[in-house]
Amino acid sequence: MDKQKHWESIYETKEPTEVSWFQTHLQKSLALIDSANLNTDARIIDVGGGASTLVDDLLRKGFKDLTVLDISAKALEKTKERLGNKAHFVT
Image 1: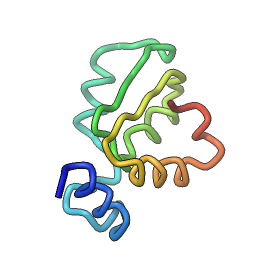
Image 2 (image 1 turned 90 degrees about the horizontal axis):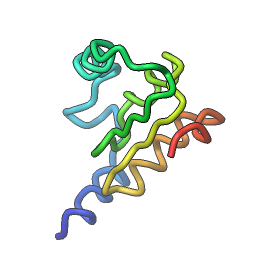
Image 3 (image 1 turned 60 degrees about the vertical axis):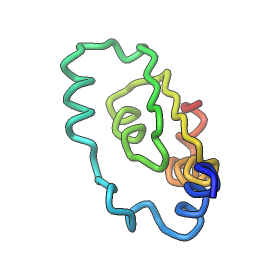
Image 4 (image 1 turned 180 degrees about the vertical axis):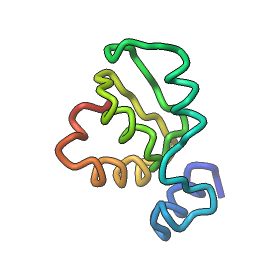
């Protein structure tokens, strides 16, 4: 099985909260971003973001130029569904 099929399979069969790596809030990532003292118009890309909640927290902090990149289209779809009307703020 290739890597993309592997990750698509995971996100097709499990909810993001059912995987071992799920965290409600990515505290270490948020702390690193906070320590950079970025303006809310800074460009931030979450590489391998999958269905991560990092983008949710960054939107709450007022960041406006966010991108989530992942090999799994299904993971990105779940993120869009979770974000609802805020999804249009994220590439």
